[in-house]
Length: 109
Image 1 (cartoon, rainbow, N blue to C red):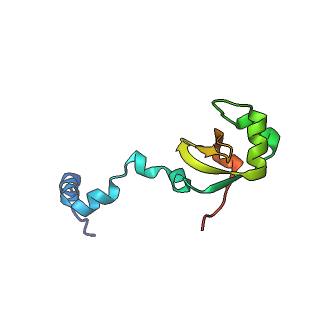
Image 2 (cartoon, rainbow, N blue to C red):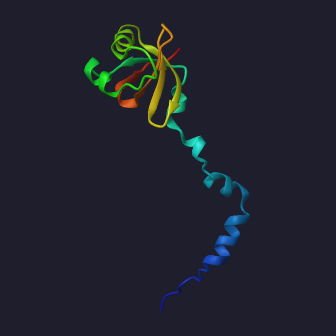
């Protein structure tokens, strides 16, 4: 009764592999998919309480409470990303990492 079109997956795969623009479209690399990297250089402010910051801060050195006080008062600049964490530097030169949900990112401009 009805006409069923013939579909050969192997031929389709060969056709697809020859199409350069299609290959480029589907060629997604992990380093290009870091959504937080677009925030490097932006100003950051605390979005959660000081206690929550104290629980989540990852600081290589220095007094965490002093760093948090400075960050809550003056904010900081996002210098890098590390997975889901943002690396932030304050005006005093203190560097630390916080998860994205703890930080409000301000638009530069």
